[in-house]
Amino acid sequence: MENITLRTQLSDLTRDLSVLRKQLAFLEESEKRVRLVFGLPEISPAVRALGTGGSVVPFASSPSALDLQTYNVESEVDRLLRRCSFERENYDAIYQELLHRKDRLDCTPSVYPLNGYLARGFGVKPDPFTGENRLHSGLDIAASSGTPVHATADGRVLSAEYQPQFGNLITLDHGNGVETCYGHLSRFAVKAKAKVRRGDIIGYVGNTGYSTGPHCHYEVHINDRAVNPLSSVCSGDDLAALPVSSVANQ
Image (cartoon, rainbow, N blue to C red; front, side, top):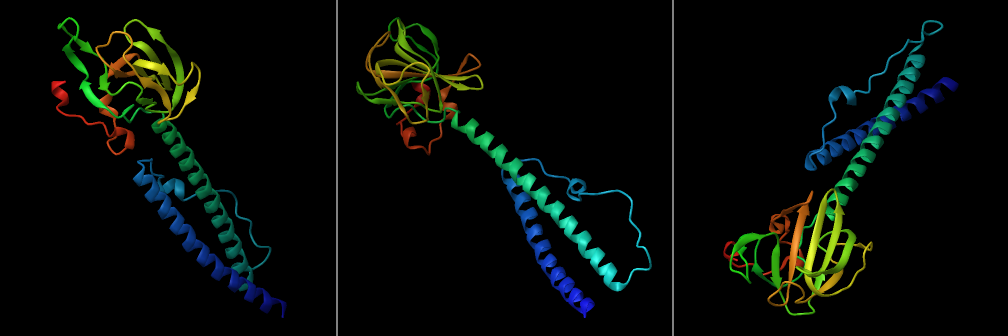
C-alpha cells in the first residue's frame, strides 16, 4: 500500500515537473529576447547547460523501478532548482544593467533648454559685435525675457554666477565628463551644489553679459570640449519643440 501511494505521489510530481520545465523554457526564451532587444551579450549554451560533476553514489543493491524513478525525480528537482537560481541571477543582472543605462540616459543632455527661436547655431559664425568669424561654441536661443530655462538632463549645479562674457551663467555637471552651460540669464532659480532633474527650471532668459538681446546661450561640453548640442536633442520631447529653421545659415 505504501509503494502504491509513493508511486502516485511520484507520478503527480513528475507531471508537475513537466509543467515547470515548460515554464522555465519560456522564461529562458523571454530572457534571450530581452538581451537581444537591449543589445546585451548572449549566454552561451555551454553556460546554460549548468554542468555538474562529482562521483555517482551507487545503490546499495540492485535498484527497483521505484528506486530509479525516485532517483530520477530527485535529480530533476535538483536540476530545475539550479535553472531557477540561474535565471533569477540573469534577470537580476539584466535589471542592474538597465538601471545603469537609465541613469546614463537621464544624465545625457537630450532636450532643448527652452522654447524659443534658434537665432544662432553652433560653429564658426560672424561675431555680432565685430563681424569677425569666430567659433560659436553653443546655441543662441532667443525668447522673451523671463522665459523659463530648463535643465536638459539630470545633474548637479557646479556654479550659478555672473561672468563678463556670458552674464548670469549656470553650469551643470551631469557626470561622465558631461557639462552644460546656460548663459545671459536674467536671474537664477537654483544655487551651486543643488541637484536638478531634466526639465527642472534653473533660471530665466535675460540679456546680461556680452549680448545683443534677450536669449539663452546654451553649450554642451564633453571632457572639456564643446560639442554641437543639436547632435543629442531628441525631437520627441515636449521641451524640444524649438522651431529650428535653416540652422546651417544661423
